[in-house]
Image 1 (tube, rainbow, N blue to C red):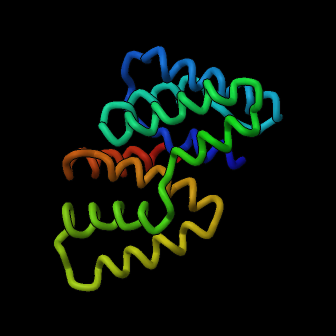
Image 2: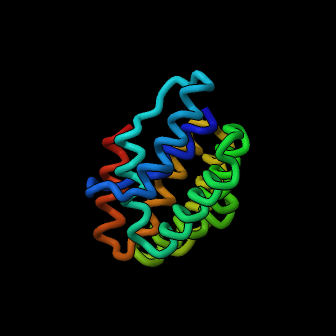
Length: 160
């Protein structure tokens, strides 16, 4: 299930698939399928990867995941662990990025809201299922403007 987290993080809109994302998702699907994981949607993975690759920070993540595929092509466990390491920065960094976007950049800047958001975010990161959602929210925080950020969060909420 840990590997589903990686895929869940790759949230996005539909776009023509790029070759790198298709290769990444095909390779991960093969590994997840070999391990008997419960769920992996290759098409969803590709569209999420494409969306992630549209931002500079996201593009860097996708390139790192592709490098994992080259380095660990014959070792699924190492491949998926390496890929997972590229997906989300440490919880404190991910929460700070997300909460800054939610409260300061796109919120009203209400005093204490940042601290409240950080507390909830760090608590969520302790629970496996909530960590999946945190990864999705973190990716939304990479959106360049508040409207896109809000739309991403709204879409993410409907996907669950």
